[in-house]
Length: 115
Image 1: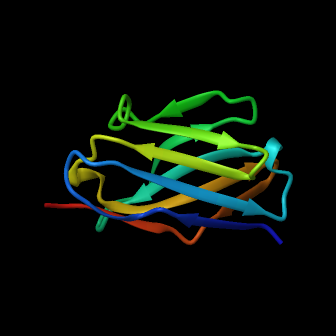
Image 2: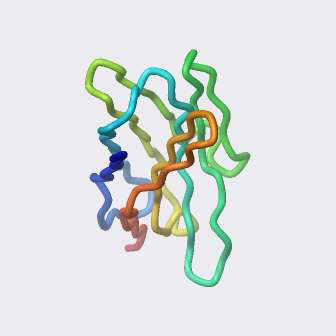
């Protein structure tokens, strides 16, 4: 059974930083395409950042230069380093793993950016 468990969310002031983690189990991690998505209240879920099995990354325009996605295959974990956070980044952040026809999601972690 595939499980994705996010951690690292919380309350941070504008301009601050957070690092989200997503630990995967039950699947061959190194083969996964991994992504972070987010959903703000009243808005659709959107892709924030993704990283392929070979390390290729892509980002939403709104987070380029501020967020960095990375993976540690030895730890079966994907990270999202978020710097220069803005109130508009407030959302529930979800980890997503894709391999073949399999599409797996974590339970989400809340990020709130507020003074």
